[in-house]
Length: 595
Image (tube, helix red, strand yellow):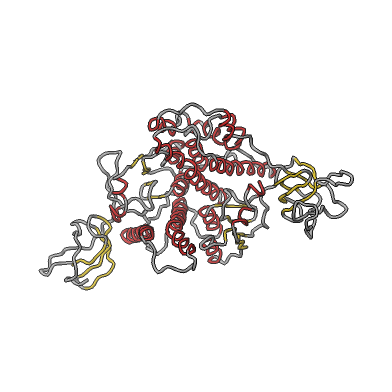
C-alpha cells in the first residue's frame, strides 16, 4: 500500500477495467477485470497535482469480436455472466453458439454432433498451441475464456466448460435433455461414463499409434471389453425393466426417446471402432454387444444424421494412413469371443428341510454353514467341479456364497438344476429411502454425505471396507443384480433408482432435495463445478494422501508439491471473482456461491 513499496515490473494499462477491493485515502487495491497488467496490487487514484489516474466507471466487462468470423478475440471474462436468463428455460436454442475445443482427435466432436443433429448453427473454433496457452488465465488473466479448460460452449453471455457440463447445457437448450430428475441425472452419468471409456480405451490406443506413427491391427482389449460390457448390461437391464413394467422400451439410454447422452455414446463408440484395432467384424460385434450396436444403429439411421459420415475415420486416415490388413480370424475371435452368458442354477431340492446344505469348502467334509440355501433360490455359478458347485446367491435366502452339491450321492436326486431365468436387477429400496454406497476411504462419498446432512435427509451410509467388498458388488460377481453401473462407486440409491458417478449422483440428490434450480444453465454450471472439484481431488488430494500413506510411519507432511494445488484453486477463485464482478457491474446481487 505504501507508495514507497516495491513496484511491479508491468504497468496497469490505460483503459483497463478494475474492481475495487480496498481503498485507503488516495490508494486503491484492485483486481484487474480487463486490459493488461498485474492481476492485483495497489495504485494511486490521482497524482499529487490532482490529476486523476483512475475514475469510477459504469462500464461492464464486454467481449470484443475479431473481424474474422472464424475467430474470437481473447478479450473476454472467464466466468459465465451472472445475469437473469429467463430466456434460457431448458428448451431454447435461440442465440449465438460457439464451441471452443482442442484441435485433436475426438476433442469436442460429441458437441459438434449435437449441434449438427439439432440443425443448430454454431461457430467451431478449434484451437492449437500456443493459442490454448494464451487463452488460459496465466496468459489472459480474468479475460480468460477457459473456466477449467477445453471444451467450452459459449451461448450469448453464458459459458459452460467440461464435456459433461457443456453436453448437458446444450442438450437441455436444444430439446434433447431429460424430462425429469432421474432421466437428467442418468444422461449426465452416461456422458461421464463415455468420457471415462474414451480416456481408458481410445486414448491409450491412439497414443500408441502416434508413437509408432502408424495404425495397428490389434491392441490390448481388456479395458475395451470391460467398458462395452458396462454399457451393454445397462441397456439390457433397462429394456428388461421397461418390459416388466409395461413401459415403452427402446434402443436408447432413456428408452424410446433419444437424448444428448446417446449422441455422446455414439461418438465415443464410433471413435473407438474406427481405430480398427478392437476388431472389425460388425456381425461378431453385434453378437457380443447387441444392445450397444442397436443404440449406435438407431442413432446412425436418424434422418438428422444423413450425410454426417465417419469424421473420426477420415481423421485417422489423414493423420496415420490406411488400416493395415485385417487380423487373422483367431485374433478377431480373441477380441470378440462369443458372449459368455451367466450360468444360473435354481435350487430344487431341500423342500422338506428349508433348503440345501452349504459348506465353506469344496470338500464335503468341510464345515457346514449355519443356514441353508433356500429352495427356489437362484444362484450364479462361480466354479463347477464334478457335482460340487461354488455359487453366488442372487435371490432367496441363505449364505451369499459357498459350496453345494448339485445332486445327492445316495439316489442321484437333483438338488439344483440349470435355469434359463434372467438374473434379477439390483434390489429396490423402500420408496423414499436413500442409500449412499461408497469406499470407506478418505474423501470418498463425503460430498454426498454432506449433502444429505445439510438438507437433514435421513440416509443409509453403506461404507465398503475394502476392495473385496466392492468386488463382491461388481457385475463379474453378481451379474445383473449389481447396482454399480460402471463397476465403481459412488452410487446413490433412492427407492427404485440407482445413479452412479459423483456428478450424476450429486445432481440427482441435489435436484431431489431442492439445491439446484430447475434451469438449464444452473444445472450445467453445478455439474461443471462437481466435475472440476473431482478433478482437483484426483490431482491434488490423492497424490499427497497416497504419499503420506506410503510412508512406513504413515505420518503427515509439513509441505507437498503445490503447483497443482495453486493452479486448481486459481481456477475456482477466477470464476467466483469474475462472477461477483459481473454481478456488481450489472447491478445484480452478488453472493459467495457458485450460482
